[in-house]
Image (cartoon, rainbow over all chains, first blue to last red; front, side):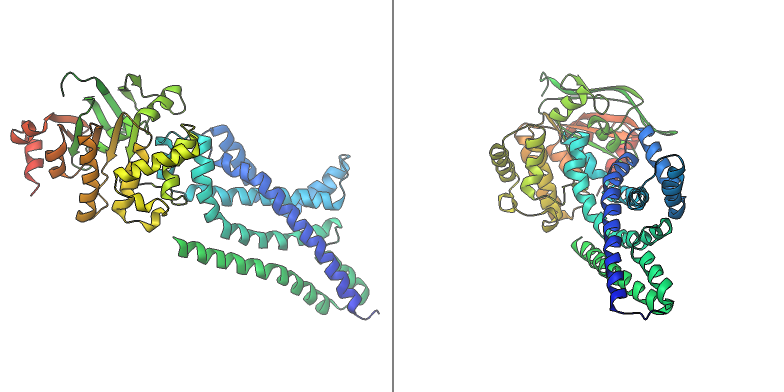
Length: 215
Length: 247
């Protein structure tokens, strides 16, 4: 049996970089898809509203694990063999987009309707109403819940281990396979996750308090 | 001012919210330079009428024309014209909280009227002087009192040089002192010849400033006429009772 040593910890920390990368991909991808989704949800067009709402329901009603299986094993069998990073990045992007789209829709709707009416009466067209009046106010409302959701993304990247992507959780399993000290190893893994997530939670709470104080 | 051109013309206007008929065949003519006070109990449809003129509501029947253009549906070319002709001031001010007073005013000037920034800022300074708030140009709305916010809202509308200004219970959220300062600004505007339609609970203001009083009841124009005349000789029992209830 191999003793748990500094090299193992180093290995875990290196794997944590992949966790961070995957989180960033999921967040950036999710944001790029999520904003149009949020705007579609508040659109005047019933078709756009329906499409966005259908997508969000579908993703929110499906386990992320199954989405990962589909994009890795499912697409693989159909001939589209994705490397684990791409499969995991795509799955997490789709997942984050659905949730961010829904969070941001709420933030847009939290801006009083009268703001849009006032902008309308001043002659701003719909695009200008959103760009200059509604979205700048919605962004302030959105920052705390968005940062809070980033914590969920970080934790959910651990699911990518099931398709063989070596991020922090998978690295923990690998080390455990050679050392058989699950308690020590997974405690170390948990501490690293916590070290990433706790500052985010803290930031979300601070931002929320500031947002309330500002009103 | 008889003989002046008609600025706002409304015929047989019908507005329904689901099964509820809020406006039931309203007609109204407003001439250039007139100040019209729309009065009536809550739920009589007076605010809805104003929102219809502003193009904020889709109507179920009738016609509204402003400066000869029909009030169109949202997004239409007619709507763009309407926005140039009509200014609207709301009970809740509706200033943009994330922008300074100056930017609140210049936003539409630069975006809609495509004015250069310097010209827009000069215009902002002019209209702020008209409402007596020159020193608040760099403030944010939350740093102002309700009366000051409402005066900025009036200035913001004025900056666009509308043909007619609509006021929707603009003093209802203010205490008497702040009400007086806002009404002062409006009186000033009326004297300068601005065409104004004002939904109001301020009967003193209506008596003093309005040329025409329109009493609404059950979604109809129940009684209307020159201010002195209607207050001296109310023709309908409902208006008599309404006037009698003010102390």
